[in-house]
Length: 253
Image 1: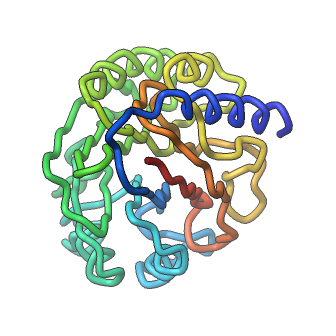
Image 2: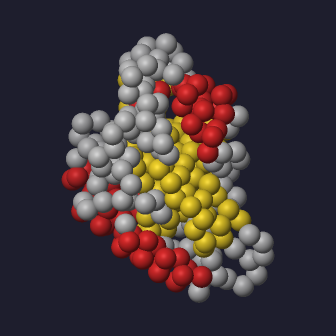
């Protein structure tokens, strides 16, 4: 934990030297990532209301959500992200990864603002295809992904992710269930180009008795602004899903 904080502090201090002239006013983002298992909790009950309650309690600007049905038979033809949008008052942006049960299965974003542009990229997954969702907002870019269970596929995904966000000239955040532990080769690769903002010493899975970290939020190192970290939390939500959500809050100018 101390090493993570030391490296994070050093990186954020180095970013301060990159602040560009003419950028007036402070901006901020509260970002959450949550694998909701399509609303099915550790008690095997599907309840979108309690997922929405966890989100509303944290009041995020953007939420990256993984494991989402869209009009599947399993979910009673319900557009799950749309239901969560209704319950939270946030805007829904969905990206399908695969066809499933008469509908789609994938990832999404909930956000206070509607993104200006949205992009979807296919990612490899030998157990099931994966996807990357990139949402370009006025002051930042938020990405969501749910990566393969296989390390080889995660490593193949990384250059696609890196290329997808390389042209942005604003803060780029990527979040999701990466199915990788902090000591994995994939996370070491991510650390070359991104700084992981979440506290990787705090476990996120399984939700009732967490034993490992699989959920992350990271920030591109190629950021032409001065960044200040305010908080990084793993939310105490032991029943609502099989993962605990993670949040970060940062400001920049």
